[in-house]
Length: 193
Image (tube, rainbow, N blue to C red; front, side, top):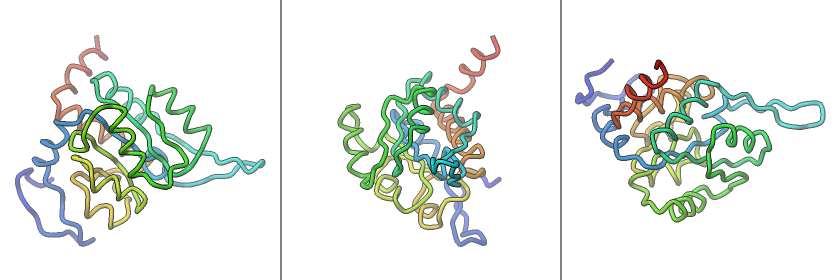
């Protein structure tokens, strides 16, 4: 792993590694964390059932990470381009209060979220994986993506997971935020007690 304060040349993919120290400072200020669904909370695959319904698979570790953010006082939200009863159910299970589905303009949904919560973009974070997420990723104080995000997303993020979407990237992010805010150890101690 690179030293956090070291600036490194681009790797083989042409993407410069993120500055861990700067990402930690940005994550420490977060009051709201917004999640995309397909490609972030799921692996991005769309499986269709016999009646044409879309079947999505969520990672339970990712889900617990969102719950931990809520316990730490960080507002969690979902902004996704697809409309799905499965996403509504998963969001309810995770106590995600702000869910925007079927969104074609994620920037407008994000602005609505900020107004509802009473925050500015600089204390918000977003994790996304593809071009539809860029209007939010380029406005928030902390932009993140999974390891398998599109290259145009990666080049605009402050933090990149080492894991793929739907395979632990969201949990890795949640743990990073909790550590940045000094809450990880206390939450772990509560879990062990």
